[in-house]
Image (cartoon, rainbow, N blue to C red; front, side, top):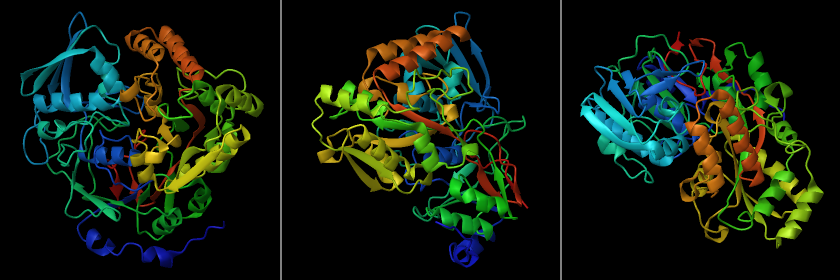
Length: 522
């Protein structure tokens, strides 16, 4: 379909632009989907993670080179036997309601995050207890040395160990919080926010940035605007029209087919904020037929050809890479999958496996997101490939937030469950076996799809305890091999996507997350 700019249409989009601009410098930011869930521990959705970085802060953070640096923490110490970690908070940290950030707040926050996140769960396996030394200092006591303490607390992307007040962090990890009080650089304006239209954040005047210059997600979080508004604008064409007309300032991830138009727009600059890129995956539900049968999961993997997905969704080869490594090509743990897996499908072997497994031809329910453009074309490709491999497929279309909600359903498809869906991860989330939530195989505690595989957990434990990089690389390869042996999930291509911002906007940082501090508007 030919795309054209329509400034007249864009002008009608934001009826509230005038009053908002009158309040000072405002950044109007369009994310890659609507924001409906405001609890960044309850969901891994990236739009909610982005919201989290506005409202909350972290104990540690990763810089532009993926090194972990203190953030809310002023200093930390490790005992000689490496089992006692002592953390002291910076002076002057406050929640948005004016109350001080305390040790007990942080302990409660770590515990809640540790119940949901894959890295958090593994860290908590090694934690013996927490001790509050004083209101600003606390200890994490381990059962035995663990090599990924700082990597865990400084985890950059979903789910991020954001700090919350104890009264909020004490919420059941499997229920959503009902408060948006944080200590981050912005304050969420609940009364002004209208889900489905916009979410409003004002500068936290009491926030005390670190003294270091910003780098990635670390360093000084200096806010240079008065207000950020997340504008809900699901139509990509409308987004492009709006930024061309100056109605919005930043688009997190414009669809690839609209990038040529943006390149020609004089008032717009493209910025590759996430150089490591992203990876598409598909997840099968281990709890329900037919994917509770490992041979049928294997048949699905044998039917995959990554380039079909990448051409259908990304298009231009400059923005994608066929990559058969689970842990991101070009990074230390990357190992190619064997043979032609993910490159050249073997439909005949897939059909043979389905016959051997006794597949009865019941259609698998494939969830298709229609509102997250980068995912919209994924499901039709899967449908076509799996049908060539002998499956019957019932592709059901819905908005992304419905996918996010429905994927939590562990029941059969007759009761609102599912068999397969697609998503993607920023590369920073999936660089090793512990941070990659798709690799967790501890049943009910695992990411959606809920695989159970004790052998996989043994390999992940071994990786977590190992400090020799060479041995860690070998263990990462073993984890990938085990994931392929059990057909734990499928990774279907690596891709890159620049953001777009108005030319009078600057300061967007290179990081795995689009953050709103350091951004200036002239």
